[in-house]
Length: 184
Image (cartoon, rainbow, N blue to C red):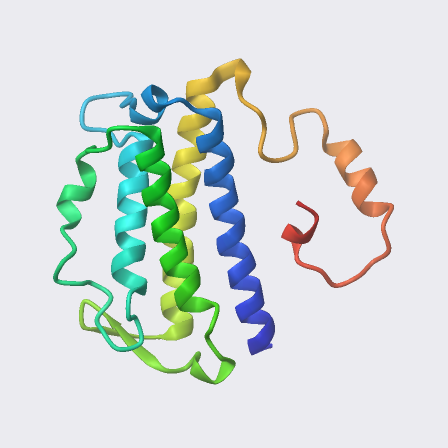
């Protein structure tokens, strides 16, 4: 079970990263920076926040508190990017930090205690906390991307009206244990 947990969460994180990647690919820099209303979060700001959180949470996470003294969370909500390339670089820097931290984990470490703002979490709890946090924000990125692109949006899931075809293809395969992201 514990081995499948680590494999599954890595696939889940990779899945949410891919949703963000596919959204960012569809957008130009102006769209990434667009705020729909004053003081709302643009995609650029959400990226800056997620990556800042990842860098803080996963850098030396086994030995240091997940809320680093060098993190300035409030500045994550100020868009300072100059290019789309900068946005993508920071996005990937955060995800690389996360994956570099969790890929080497061993199942016997999952019950170890780490800290986020002095609150103890098992490694499993910390992973679950961050998986939910990142999925929440990636969902915002996808939603904003869909609003921005309108009819030009390329669906990242089963397109409307295609559920029957999708299900027919899935049910044409033998039953078997596999992660839902294996076919994506």
